Image 1 (cartoon, rainbow, N blue to C red):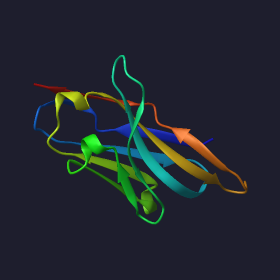
Image 2 (cartoon, helix red, strand yellow):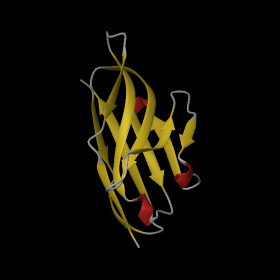
Image 3 (cartoon, one colour):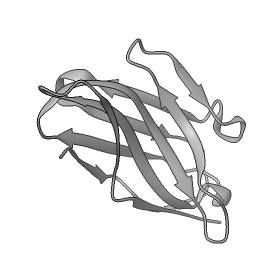
Length: 121
């Protein structure tokens, strides 16, 4: 299978910045959508940002203007650059990708292991 490995989480003060990375490895033919989700304690998981293979992006309203999602197709990697972090951004962030493996015709979804982002006030 395909494995997604995340990095870049940590503890920052309000107003600070973090850059999350998620790299996919395995027998990959193509990756369509790449996205980031987050889940705070006691809350449902929510979609934070998504980027298509063509580079189109969408964000949840609460992060618009502060977060930027990008991708590096040569590295099979998606990034989430986060500026002006707020305590309400705290949570576990998960990357997600829609992947076509080599020699297989179907699309599959894969998830990263999650990385903790904590924003202190």
